Length: 236
Image (cartoon, rainbow, N blue to C red; front, side, top):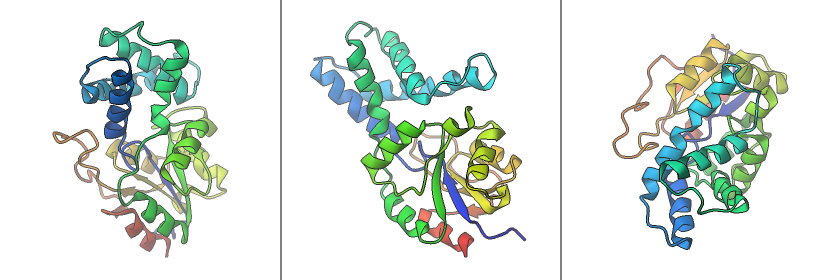
């Protein structure tokens, strides 16, 4: 029998916040101020598409660890070049544009759900976002974390096992006392391999109306829920 969950750690981008709509909105505002007409959603999708390849170079040891803030900036430069928009922004404007990842709207039930869950267990992000990014995002969206965990404390990116293990160690809990919660099955596969309990919550529109991945659980995760507040039974 699995022990009671003492801490829930969460994927953030997609699981808790609607990055696609939020980044497209920021892109629309930014380009409108420049008098540039662009498909803002396509821009957001391409920018996000650079995310995993940028982290892969660090996971494989081809680049030392740098915070996701830097990767977002570099990926923005590459995305602007892809859309033939290089040269339209100064460096300070690029950093301001890149900070859009600190202003992502939570899904509707997230803040209330986290607040409810926090009364029963420790809650923290286990995100590839830096401590700085996660702190500012929490301020923006009202995410009531007990602490900030994730890539920065491990010096690596998910799904490397040390990211999940570092979160457990930071809380002085064994992995089986911690549940990783995500809308991405691959995240949960890695967390389970590191010894954590796992919780799946579907976000079938994370990638838009034609999403074809992560529409449901792909393994026998300990928890499969539709709302974050439903996770509280695993802390009882």
